[in-house]
Structures are given as structure tokens and as C-alpha cells.
Length: 264
Image (cartoon, rainbow, N blue to C red):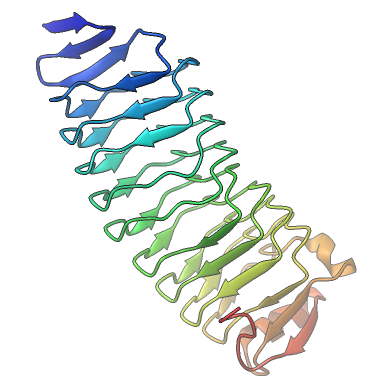
């Protein structure tokens, strides 16, 4: 059974299955607990969403392709945002995620071109595959509560210039920043152990990178091989594996004992 009123289709277990309206501002009814799969998908009228605090989950594709969506007032009790939930919400600007949030799914903010800044709540421990691919992020510090960042999480971000990676991250996954052509500053904290394939592929603006001594694995294709003939300089302590890697792969290198970008 379901109820259908005021353009909402809500089943008896409080899943919002579908919205059929054309309003610019949508206030989701009190009592809804989950915004269902594709519930608002493709709606190009909505500019603002207000959620009641009864909402605990946003299912896959819930707002995919809502190209006019600019602002969201999230439930203070939201637990999860599932995969592709805000995929192609090209006008979604900076948002404030609630402290209750525990997980964000793959490609959740894919192609959110105006999303220039976001803060991840402390309960989140993993950034999933492609979560922020092709988003508008400019300067991002991965918080210490993050233990894992999956593949392509920050790939093809056209505005991304600076990223700081904490000691809680041990692996820079494959394709992590690939295609982020304006990335110039990467701060890798001591504690990172491995840099996997294509992590920095086609990062054309990256000219210097300090790799701490804790890194003992660097895949041959971790850095774009075109950089051999260009300007990439690998900086690392004299006895670090990164120096051995640079020599093997014919990259320029400099002996630098401490990360010169840590407090920049």
C-alpha cells in the first residue's frame, strides 16, 4: 500500500518512493525515514531540498541529474548517502553534512561541478570509489578519521589544486588523482606506505612532490611517464625508497629530509 498526496508517493514503511512535482523548493514530509532509489532522479525544477530529522538514509540515484539543485538542508539524523545519490547535480554548491553521517557511497557526488568545498563528519572512515570524481573541489584535506580512500575518488577534478593526505591513510589507491590537471600541491604524511598505479596519471601541473620514507611501494605507472621529459621532481630523504624509484624510472629527484609542505 502507499499514499499519494501533494506530489509525494510514500509507502507505509515511510520510504519516499517518488516525487512528481515541479516546485523549486521541496519540503519532504515529516515521518519519511528513507528517500528511495531514484525518487527525484532527473527532476530539473528543484533548487532546494529540506529534509525532516526523521530521514536516516538516501538511497542510490535519489537525486541523480537534478541539475538545478543548489541547496540541501539535511536531516540531523542522516546515517548514509548511497551510491550516485547526487550524481550530475551540476549546480549543487557547498553543503553541510550532518555529524550523524556514517557513510557516503561510490560516485555520490560525481560531476558536482560547483561543489568546491566539503567537510566529512568524524564517523566516516572510508571514501569510496569515485565519490568526488569530476567534482568542483579546489582544496581538500582528508581528515584523520579516514582510514581508506578507494580508487578514483578524486580523479578528473578540474579545479583541485591542493590535497593533504593524513598519516591514517596507508595506501594511495590506483587512479586516485588521475586527470586532475591543475593539482599542484600534494602533502603526503609520514605513515603512507604505498602509491599504486596511475595515482597521479595526467596530473599535468604537478611539478614537485615530497614522498616520505614510510613509502616502500610505488608502482611503476604511479606517475605519468610523460613527466620524465617534463618537470616532475621527486623529493625524499636520501635513503628513502622514493629516491630509488626516481632513479629507476628516470625522474628528476632531490634529497629533502623533511616534508617542506607539511605546514603550508
